[in-house]
Length: 356
Ligand code: GLU
Image 1 (tube, rainbow, N blue to C red):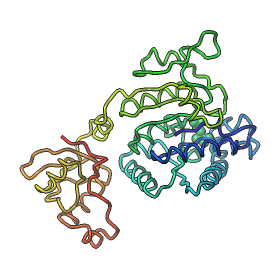
Image 2: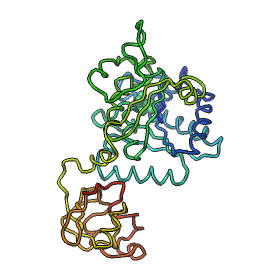
Image 3: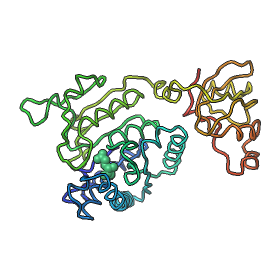
Image 4: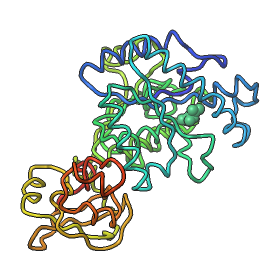
C-alpha cells in the first residue's frame, strides 16, 4: 500500500488523525493479508521543519537534506500510529539499485519476508538522502511496484489524492473515471495528465501508470483509489470507486525477470532427492548438491541440473561458488562450521527460481 505525501501532510505537518484512521483499516486488512507500506512524506516533512522553499524541491541537495530530516519524523509517525495497535513498524530505505542488482534484491526480499514473518509492518521509502538522480526512483509509485515484485505481492494499492485515472484531465468538463484497465497501452498513457494536483509529491498520474505497467507485467494487480477521505479503503470498496489495472501476464512471468537474458554464471548439479523435491516446488538445499561449476557471487544467476545433466531450472544463488563447494552435500547443522556464519534457508530459494 503506497501513501502519497499529499495525503500524509497538510501545511507542513502530519495529518495524524487521518493516518490513525487508515491504520485502523490496515489492522482490519491484516486479518487476511500481509501488508507492506510504501510511504512518502520525508521530503515534505523535512522541508517544513527546515523552512526550505518549494516544499524542499528547489534543488536535489535541498530534497536530499529535507528527506534525511523528514524521514526521522516519518518513521516516528508510522511507529506511533501502528504502535497504538501494538504493531511494530520497520523502516526500510531503498534505492533503485537495491531492487535491480540481483544480489541486493535477494537481501531486500529476504528482509521483507522475515519482517512479515515476525508480524511487523515494513514501512518503505526511497533512500532519498543518498540516491543520486541516476539511481533514484524519483517517485514512490514505481518504488511500490518494485517492492511488490520483490515481496511477491498479489496486489498494489496506490492511495492518491484523486479517485483514479480519468479519460482526460479531470479538471475538464466531461472527464470520466476509468474503472478498469486491461493493459497500459499508449492510449491509456495519453489519458494521463502529468500534473499532480497537489504539487507535494513527485508522482502524478504518469508515474502511477508506469507503476501499473511494472505490476501488470509481473502478474500483480494494481489499484488507484482516493485516499483523501477518512477510512479511504472502505470507502473505495463500498463505492467501487477507483481504477483497477489487471495483470497482463501470469505468475510465471513474475519470475521471468530473474533470468532475463543473462547467461547463467555457473551450474549446480543436484541429486535425485533434490530433483523430486524441486518438482514439488521446494528450494535447492546444500544437502542435495553434488557438483558446483563456474565461479559466481551471491545473487548471480545459476543453472540447476539433475544427475543426468538434465536442465531443471535456474535461479539466483544465495552463496558464492566457493561457499557452495564448502557446503556441498552438507546438512544444515554442519553448514555453519564451513561458512563461519549461520546458513541461509536455501542455496537457491524457490521464490527466486524458474523451473525449466
Ligand atoms: N520519497 C519521497 C518522500 O518521502 C517522495 C517521492 C514521491 O513523492 O513519490 O518525500
